[in-house]
Image 1 (cartoon, rainbow over the protein chains, first blue to last red):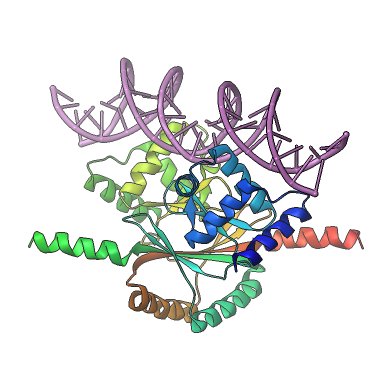
Image 2: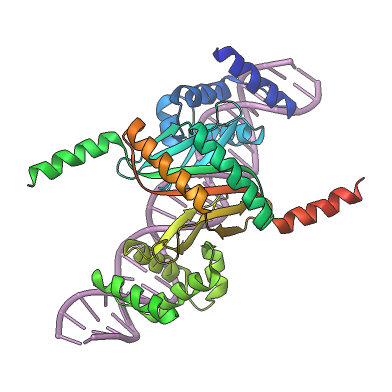
Length: 155
Length: 155
DNA sequence: CTACTTGCAAATGCTTTGCAGGAGA
DNA sequence: TCTCCTGCAAAGCATTTGCAAGTAG
C-alpha cells in the first residue's frame, strides 16, 4: 500500500533528475502517516534525526515535482501535505483555538455546486481555476467540549 | 460614503481605547480604495510616507478591533483586507502567474450549497465554523490572454 | 497631565543558502 | 566518476519590538 506511494514519488523525482533518498522518504512517510497538513515543527517531532535545513530542502524538492503542497494556515506557520492527486481532494477544518488542521472530503452535493460555480467564474471573470482551497475556521469538537466546561463553571 | 467607514473604524478603535489617527486612516483608506487584498508592499506604494513598522503596527491594531483581516496568499507574503462585516462576504481569485488577487461575490446558489455543507460538517465532525475562506488558484483573464499570444507564436 | 502613537534602529525567528564532504547509479 | 544530496553554520528577510519623543483629549 505504501509501496505504491513510494514508487510514485520516486518516479516523479526521477523525472526531474533527482533521487528518492532516505531523508526524502522520511518526509514523505511523515506526511502520509499524519494524514493532515503538518508544520515543520511537526516534522521535527515525527523525524527527530532530520535536520531542519534538510527538511525544508526536501519539502521544496517535493513541491517542485508535485508530490507536496504547501498550505497557508491561519497562524504564522506554513503546513505541508501530500498533493491531492496522491491523496484525494479535500477541505480543511482549522480550529482557531488549538490550531490543529483536519481534512474533510466534500459531499457529492457540494462538489456539484462547486463545479457549477467554477463555470460561473470562467464565464463572468474569465478566470480559469486549476485548483481551489476551502478552509473552515472555527472550533473543533474537542475545544468546544473544553469551552462548554469552562462556561458551565462560570454560571 | 467613506464617512460611514471612518466613523465605524473610529468606534471600534475607541472600544479598545485606541485613537483613529492619521496614520491609521491612511491604511484604512488604502485598503478601501484597493478593494482587494493588498500586501505590505502595496501599502508602501499607496502610502509612501508611512514607515513600514507603523504600517505593520496599524494593521495589527486594526485586526484586533475587527476592522482588518489578514489573508494568506499562495506566495510568501501576507495580504490585508477590510473584514467582511465591513465589506461583504467574498472569495478570492488568485492568479498563480501574476500573483494578483481579486474578490468575487458568491452566487446565491453557491451560498445555499455552502450553508448546507456547513450543517453537514457540524453533524459529521462536530466542527462549528464561524468563518470560511475559499480561494481559487488559476490564471486570470489578463495572463491567459498573454499566454495565448505566446502559445500562438510557438505553433 | 496622562495615555496612547509613532519613527528609528535593533532584534527576532522562520526559512534559505554556501560550502565541503558523502552517497547513489 | 559524475551528479546529486546533506549537514552545518551563516545569511536573508519579512515582521516585531524597545525606546524616547510626539500628540490627542
